Image (cartoon, rainbow, N blue to C red; front, side):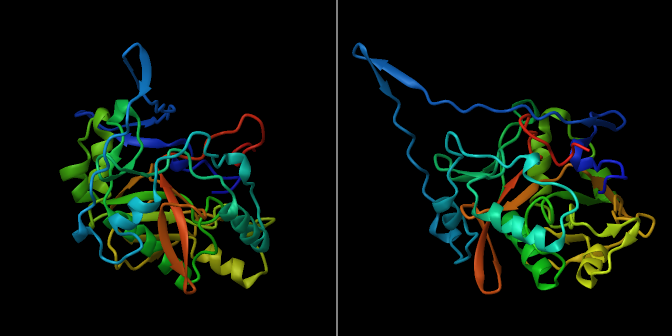
Length: 316
């Protein structure tokens, strides 16, 4: 997406919903969610309710992977009160490649993390992804999904398709559903079961995650590709997709009719525009490997929130 192009589905969270009548497109508003602790009044005084006992993670769930259930449980607590968020205004358009890399390093070291990020529910012994209560509420995601996303990141680095994991580069996604499968299974979820839809999608290896990369990298100058060969390669390979499997390969898609080479449709697939966001951060819940080192990242179903105190990535 570039200044001169229409906003992508993911920017306004346009969802495709079927309510047992012909499909409707609507913009999903994502209200905030509050999480409050209770108190118990007894013996004339007030005592805090003790936290529920943590559910044990089965030993069989530990496959030695940094994204196994026990490993995630050990580092993925729910957001603490006051946890800083990444805002739209943390980024801008038209980064040079050195600027983009430098900003990614700054954001990795920053305490800011994705709003409404995935977290481990210790009481239930489950990995949860926040979602609106009127659309089904928080729902469980499996480690298989996390491992697939980590594989997409690792493979993208190996093939030099990306330079960073955050919104200005590889930071948001869409979902490709085979047309036949969409008609047979996914087209008929009502609005109040959107959490079930995502839960089922994220566990289905027949689906592919699609990423627009180089999102805010400056690839064009006066309508022409910049002279830098690395940037030209990034422009050529900015649309990638991979199945939801731990050994996923990546497919490159192109749109020669778009100056920015932005793909919004893939033949044979239903385009589900409202995917998830991902961002690398030093305390993130999940792990990807690059160059022999481990890096952390988070996942959220929500777009970056607007910060009324400053500019934003979509404030043209």
